Image 1 (tube, rainbow, N blue to C red):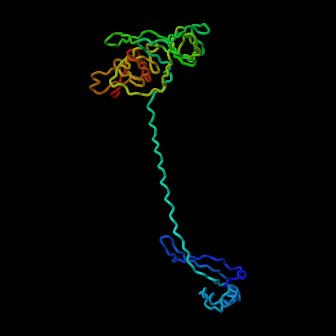
Image 2: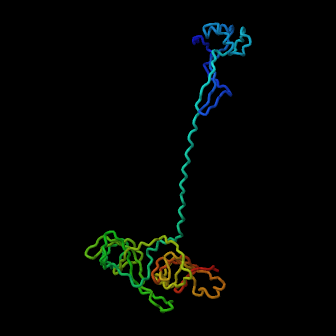
Length: 353
């Protein structure tokens, strides 16, 4: 039996799927869902089940089936206009396969553990270290001596061209850098208990820097790029000293004690910011970056202070810039008053007063 679609009224609602509550039958693989489909029709004035059957099924004989599909109609011979009835209702079951659960999300890759870099070691910044001199025994071998200046003057400054007579067979080339220095007097240690006023070595005074521009027949032409002090004919050259301006602090030698034997410019009074020489070196355990405290001679530790476990107050601090075998170049970093030759430095092991 067929349905005539041309006879469906404008109020007919299109086919719908109705899920029956409680009529889903589970299986391991999936489940069945009950459904119902059909047409809904709104009764018009004058409609009877007879008329409606003929409209939708082309025969009035189907009216008992329509009534059966609509148990809410009490009297098949009188239908209230506006009543909604079901036409051609069909029930059924549909199998819904069980949906496989999605695979679990992969475990997120653990964040790489980024270890914090260790803090930089404590350091002392001293850019003027490039002009700090030193005492050495024996005196440093010169690689060359300034014989003349390009303009014929005895003194030369930054930017001046100089001619150097080389004393070495070492090979140098254009662009090589050199440190200019001058040997000064021999320095004695007046506080050496074994050899009174024993010679520590020769003071090497740092004057500036020069860069090679040409070499020919044992003579090097160079240009002075930095001037720390006056440079003269007769001054010497050494390989460039690349000293670090950022001096890493090192632990001092326990029980270390020594004295200042000279200020770099041979001044009798000095303080913070001045470079001095002390009578202890690498043979005694001194290294670049070690720091020590300064005391006047009367502040040197005594038996009384040792028994009390106290030292007198330090009057300043020094840091080792350059350590030679029997002496060191140090910088006075702090001072509460002026110092002179003979000032004591030592490791501050106990508390200050």
